[in-house]
Length: 633
Image 1 (cartoon, rainbow, N blue to C red):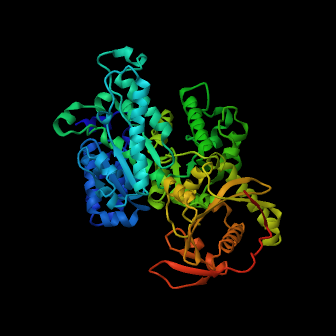
Image 2 (cartoon, one colour):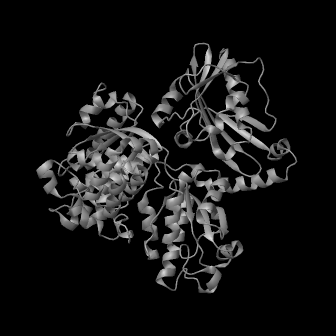
């Protein structure tokens, strides 16, 4: 079978990185305990997604369907996803549900009929819109592209084709609040022109490649593109484009390639829903360098030029540093003497990583699960945002057993495979990169400095005053919209309603003169924390109702909420509202703000199910926050 053959090919997914447990081993183990221990069976099913064996994936998907109630209970999010395609997508949808569960999402799916994507999108009363999807996946292939074999005006053809697809995106945005995932188009090998094809701009293949580039450039925060052409190149286009499947069942992507496509699509959906992981936790000995620093000393570590292993460790460090520069937090969790563990960062000439790149550094002889909990406490982040990398299989297994919420990457024995192992996990997928992402490590190191100030201050008031905080308040705008989208969709702790709004939904609020939006940037004498709070408020009769209020966890406890309340009161009074209404909808992660409205002087109203309603009569004057100087943008 093609799927089994792919599973054995090195460098394509994580199947080749599982020396002890293959996808089928994990499936067999899961099936043996599905009735007695469904939660563990589901955890084993997740590991099937690390490989590419189609038969194992199908078995895992069937298991997931049987344990649907348990999967819904254990998932981080439930999402409604509509798959509309130009080919037969039934097998893809089955696998997508399993891949999504691996990233913490329980999918409720709708599958359109064969080649019905245009009808479903353009008819505003279609079944697709009736399910109110969170995400629409355009599962389309090169046969859906309306380009000729050759053209006398290829630029015009590409522009026209780009407009056709972006118009479909726009119609989805106008008819729903769904985000869009667009599969781009595989450029087929050109049997007519052969090696000359790349130099010809007027052939169908060249125009499809140009259309792919144009669509990637046009995609905004509400649209994410899965690069199918890149995926097909990785596993071989002869595998991806096996025409037998098309001729027999109108299946444009071969069964052996579907696991890879499902996994990448699920990772992009997870990123759109704010479920990308935030922290890469690294072991040191034989993970960032070869050898044991406590025994071998700096001079005998394998790192940098001089050996293949040393070059592989240096390359892995550079990869980790690039992740950090993109916004992933790096942490160290090592069984080592703390000073000895830091020595290579300070003295080894070939270290690509410095101590400044590490947001949290824990080195001692305590069990790794205990230290991971310590790292989580230091960063004030949930363990379910952690990805753990360690060369020792025993350490990986104990973390899996005791901290199942932590993602554990299975490393190969050869360090040359470390980059592929982490990259192929797709746990750090992103749909956009903001300035705040690039400064994230700096922000968290500043938080550590802030803790030091708090420990030396004689009172909390003295601590707040010592920070010299300044806030800039302004309405949402196009410049800051990507960060607002990210904040609204990723924030779980300081999130009163956990309502998720995509880019187009937030843009609609911006365009509505009756709706009020607030973005807040905070800086202090230690750091510029960037845009850390976002609020959407709407009129409700004589009241000003808070639809969304989110704030970054890194500034919780800094009195920012009092500044936001001042803005709410000023805005309500200026617009003639007599009351401000706030709602708190409890979730497993937002207990932090359960008492916020009461602390701010709101009176509790009646509950509607789990939703708590709070009211505040607009006072004649606005309470002053003496600790934050406010600038209105």
